[in-house]
Image (cartoon, rainbow, N blue to C red; front, top):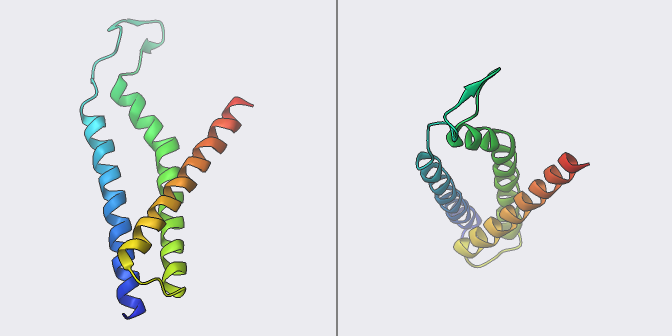
Length: 116
């Protein structure tokens, strides 16, 4: 099979898996409450809503993790295609797993730097 077709199938599989991840995250975000937990405002201002908190976490942790995952997945698909893997779907699944592993490493590094 042509390398370009394998690469395209691998990227499509990776994009589909990442799309499912984004859809689950957006669905969870939509299910969060938009009212403050204590519904009290004193001093400087109100406490953040669960939805606002999730938005900040997504911006400062989710986007770097997603970017690392996507870049690693694209590189792995390219490497597996160059190594003449026989299935684009297999390349996409392996690349997605490698990308999500990279995202977990990014999260651990971010948590470690926040603790120390």
